[in-house]
Image (cartoon, rainbow, N blue to C red; front, side):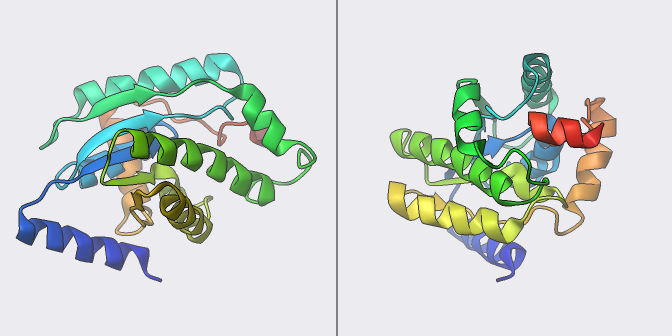
Length: 202
């Protein structure tokens, strides 16, 4: 499936209907969210949900959450963007990663991590009566957009909230996120976030 084409079709339909749905956007960090917010805030009323119990160490988690909040306050957007933070459930991440600590980034451990974060987003989207939920993760060239969308759609059916299928790296999304990071002076980390990706990056 061409996720970007499908998203373009949906956006065109929303424009014709003059409808602005509520979207819960799981975000991994400010740089990855920058282009996604610029792009989607024209068409959705967005609440950014920062839930990343995988991030190591705690000082890194704090740094990233502050950067995310700063970006939201600084961005000029059509529709206001709200912010919510989840719990820093490090034990939940280590529990799902158990037995897969040795795997390289991009494998099964990462897919379990996608699901951990998307499940929390789906549950919150249901409780908050959002129209859609999705994640910024697909903007990264290192993230598997197909698996992200498969997990998101499955969880969306389970929780009764539609998953906004996407591949935000398309249409030069990743390149634009780098430009916006420079524009807003954002801290860009050199590893995905977890202890295992941190050790791999050293």
